[in-house]
Length: 110
Ligand SMILES: [Zn+2]
Image: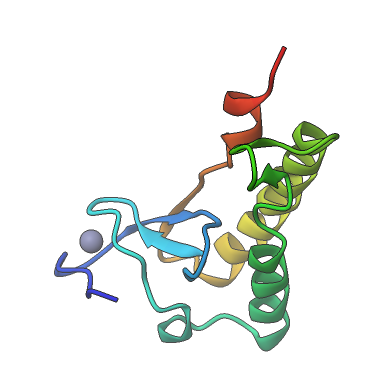
């Protein structure tokens, strides 16, 4: 994992991805070590559960979307919005935005 080179990051992004912490520098898109932030244990646990749930809508054999995948992704994004609000409360010195997953919406077969 490379370090964010922005001297002072003010704007952070909450985004789920494989093998990544859920916090990113919104300026250089570097993945940040979430342990470096003063989040509560309960919120950290919830965030990692949320990350662990990422991608359940992906059909790996076809690079498509599993049945009901669009709904799974939507539910994941709704949870992400709620968690982002909690992150905002605990890290009020930062400007925090949520970046929803769009995989299922982009890959679904209409
Ligand atoms: Zn940065």
